[in-house]
Amino acid sequence: MPLEAVTSLVTFGSELLNNPRPIGSAVPSSRFLARRMASYLPRAPRGYVIELGAGTGAITAALLKRGIPPEQIIPVERSESMVRLLKRRFPFLKIALGDASELRTLLRTFLAKDNIEISHVVSSLPLRSLPENVVTNIIREVHAVLPKEGKLVQYTYNLSKTSHPCLSGFKRIRTTIVWANVPPARLDVFQKNGKSSG
Ligand SMILES: C[S@@+](CC[C@H](N)C(=O)[O-])C[C@H]1O[C@@H](n2cnc3c(N)ncnc32)[C@H](O)[C@@H]1O
Image 1 (cartoon, rainbow, N blue to C red):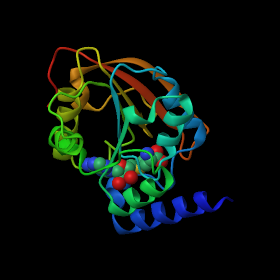
Image 2: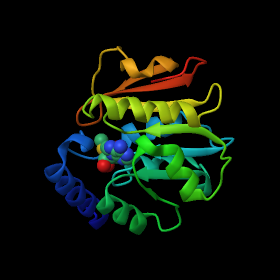
Image 3: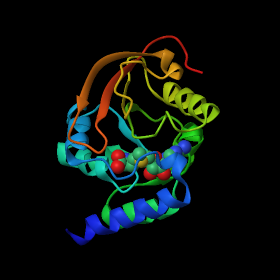
Image 4: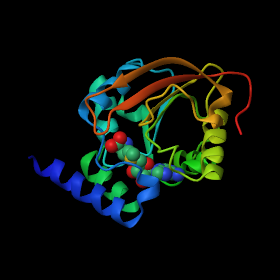
């Protein structure tokens, strides 16, 4: 196993032991899930692609492999040790250490800009295991940063088609199950609708 994969597993495992709820998974996403997730984004998005819960970079790597320009990808991660690892792994990316439930403030401070065009949010956040008030805040922020018809790509280990109730401000436009992941995951693409979330 390459050293990079071992380091990712060790960092992921120690975060999981210390703070299981925000991690919400036993291992990083498989390359199959990551590749499928990235395939839902255009190679030349109109604005920034915000990646929530970047972890050890499984999805980040797939976004880069998809050909999305690195200057348009902003991984956001709340764990300091994961951010240290991400910075080593992707020294050319701007990586935001912070909480997705304060996304607007975080991005404004991090990018030192008021008007940021964001076309996609790609999220690995474990919406089903985070506390409900945290999820409400996160989805409110995602809804606020996306333009009309902006896309949220999210996976879940709940394979049933019921969406999280907090996602009422979004319409699901694609769904697929990726079996080659531990555990298998359902991948959804949501489009923002007019109704506000949370
Ligand atoms: C299931 S892991 C996914 C990691 C990686 N993207 C992958 O797919 O392998 C969830 C990640 O979300 C991060 N996270 C959880 N809550 C967060 C929050 N409120 N803001 C930012 N990151 C958060 C965790 O630290 C963890 O790295």
